[in-house]
Length: 441
Image (cartoon, rainbow, N blue to C red):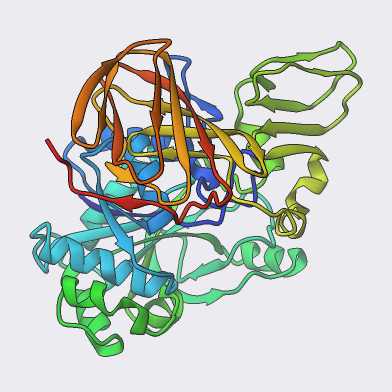
């Protein structure tokens, strides 16, 4: 099974745990079978591997999410990076060209595209695998495009609708309906309409043929190099609304769009995460604390409280979906980010000094780099590793202090899980003040 996972989002809906680097699908609020916290993308990836251990997965995403994806899914996962945002059709075409030109997938092989963040049970990916079979060359009646239609559980105004020709497990599509009001949605459902879950399957050659008619490119490298010149257009408008040969496969298993704090709290296994105490008068409330200080809650009713280094949210659950315009007014860079090598947390910001906690995964290192306008000092807190300062390698242990004046090339290597506190000192502290170099050893 060839699967393209679409990973986007701005990180505003689950603020302050999500930010402009870590979107909602990367926040570890769910639990796996071992009782460990995992993110939505980790849960989805695990479920895919259980449904098809040989699945050929490509994550289509933007530059800002690459490090987090590598951190959570490992270095082996294939990532197709959009140079800039151009809506869903160019993003899917880029991933399809990647499958064809980099991964060697043939034109008649089926490809399934789905979002990276649905909350579903394992039957969902069994259905995704079935969609690949329906779209594949082994099905003589394969439609050009096969969609997944979710059996509605209530008349929702949040989703688009698919009107099928009948009530068979697989049937032809009559029409699509944009997000309606609830009364109109109830009428659609009475006619057998299905929620459009944004999952579709096709043969690779079909999509690339449609792409060459609308976008100007020859192959993957050419499209990636000229991506900013391509027109912005959604997949629905570019393909689905123009294609007369479309089938829909019904899916009646668990499926939830957990896009807000209110809906996310519905799938959390524990009402609290982190250092939290709630008294006996609290009802239907969730508290998530990523800070190393306690939170005590008393008398909460239908509330969500979330605290991280980026800020603190206290909200009625019903109002939590209206957070976006308020988050847009919050200034400043994200104070926590996952990287391919580990993570960093901004602990303190002063006019001429910034303090950061660095967590390096075993076997990983920072880039070899220098700064023009600031000095840096590392204090090793835990773990074993090595520093390289202007090409000279030295071992480091807990308690060691390493100073790097401006202009000095340096990196930190973790031989075991390693934590260090970095203090940046200078009149101009800017993320752009970083010169990278080739690895010297």
